[in-house]
Length: 370
Ligand code: NAD
Image (tube, rainbow, N blue to C red):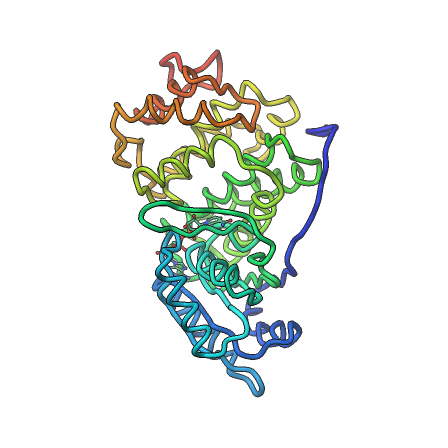
């Protein structure tokens, strides 16, 4: 059954190179782009992976112009200034980001100013490598925008680069990715192609994350990275809805950790959106958990990977809920779920208590399934 009958679809995706060991092909990808002196950026956590990539780049006519492992969450503007100076002084002609959303975000912000082409080697499942969205933070304010200059020219997905990810980072990052696919299913600008992509992405990522319970094998790691690519496609193809707006708001106001916030919030927002979903959309989600309740499974996984139990654990007070609900209600709704201030407040109260409403009935009436 199709999930939508009226749509526009437009693609602008980077070249994708996927497979174990394929990080060693970055030199030839750079040559194909006509560049020979990249600035390699990473975060402290992905620095070891980046060092290996940098070594493989020192090859005949090609060598890194400079390396940096100073990327940080939310791209502080002073780091962009600093890396622009490195570009100018080193003569770098391209940017290679090895890491999660922080390293990729820094490369994108430098690309926005310098116009240099970006090649990404993701080591988490954030999906940033697939989007033309940039963000820069100055004095606690994060400015974001879309610009084709920041879109990666090539993305090399090498699952071996994710081998060193701590269990919790892996699990929470995977759930962050699932959120992109879930919101793409009910986005007003979704398309049948996006819906199929999202259904596959959710099913494969959930199956791979379940593999963590029994210890990961190569197939789980390959599958998770494959699913994160699909989730990134979903993120770039549609306007994200209530879930992403709420996580953005919490991140901005309370400086909450990115992936952990997504992992906690997702089951609650999806439960809130359920009444507005079509049968086909519901079916697509249920298929990803073999007909079970997807919200319950997402919450179980979030807890298994150490997500905060509720909004209180993220430093959000009960008095903060009404202003957040008001702010969300003021923004134009981008999905079919209930968007009135009262129902948003009920959603936030469930999240604050960490008690997921039952899937049956009108919701938010105190009954809990978890
Ligand atoms: P992150 O890049 O900070 O990585 C999370 C943690 O994992 C960090 O501590 C990092 O050092 C560590 N890590 C990364 N690779 C590792 C490896 N190979 N081994 C061991 N540790 C490793 O965070 P993230 O969750 O990947 O991304 C979050 C950031 O990305 C946020 O700033 C968010 O706003 C941004 N983001 C942007 C977009 C977009 O489209 N612009 C999309 C998603 C996320």
